[in-house]
Structures are given as C-alpha cells and as structure tokens.
Image (cartoon, rainbow, N blue to C red; front, side, top):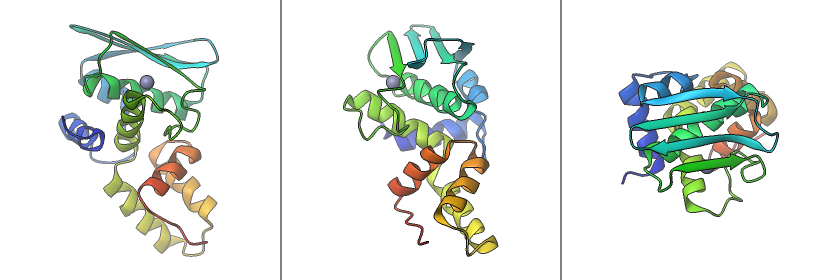
Length: 172
Ligand SMILES: [Zn+2]
C-alpha cells in the first residue's frame, strides 16, 4: 500500500487536478463516491458508507465550508486507503485539530494524512509559501498562514498544522 501522502498525489493526478484549491467534491465523485450534504448532529463531521460497489460520503452541512471540504477528503481517504469497515463515522471531538495528532486509531491518522495531502500537496504549499514570501516579505506568521489557507480553501488551523508537519518554520 502506498503511503497516504502518495495515495493523495496519485488521486490528484488521476483526477487531473493541477492547482489549488482542490475541488474535493469533484475528486470524490471521480473516484466513484457519492457525496451527500446533510444536517447531522453537531458533534458529527461526516461518515462513509463503504460497501462493494457503493461508496457514499455524508457531510455535516452545518459545519464550515472548509471543515466540510476536509471531511470529504478524510472520508475519501478511508475509501481509497481501503480501510477495513463498512461504515466510518467521524466526530468533531476525535479530530478537532483537523490533523489529529491526538487521534490514536491508525486508520483515522492515515485518513487525516491523506486529507491534508489531498487538499495541501507539499510541493504546492512550498511553491505558494515562496511566492507569498516574495510578495510580502514582512508578513507575520498569522498573515502568511491565513493567505495560504485562503489559497487552498482550508482553515487557518489546518494550514498551520500542515506547515508545521512539512517542517516549514516561518520566522516572524
Ligand atoms: Zn475517519
């Protein structure tokens, strides 16, 4: 099995996505999943029904747009990484940091890694970071993170974790 990061890159390639922001709903559909938006309980982010010939991703429509995008990517990760189980239910408590250093279930950690890499591919993040640094050399960490977050259509929190995981220490 490829790493979650590599699987995410393969998925983008297969879907023909070459630039941020990734239209994750379109990617999920291209990978054969149905995506449904529904008002779920507030402590739920989303779920995946994973049966032979049937991939259904449910997203809590009450959550923020960026959260919904991360949820779709996370559920798609469970599906494409061939995680065992017919049903995955993901809550906000389990992955409140969106990259789940706190989650202990290896499948949840993998799905989060996949999601981060799908929405924020490392090479694209490096390129945008360099670009940003050129344009606003005096931008604070918060400003740069927020600019990148909006370019990738993810939350500032998710981008901040991604930057840290990629070893991009932004001197202030
Ligand atoms: Zn999950």
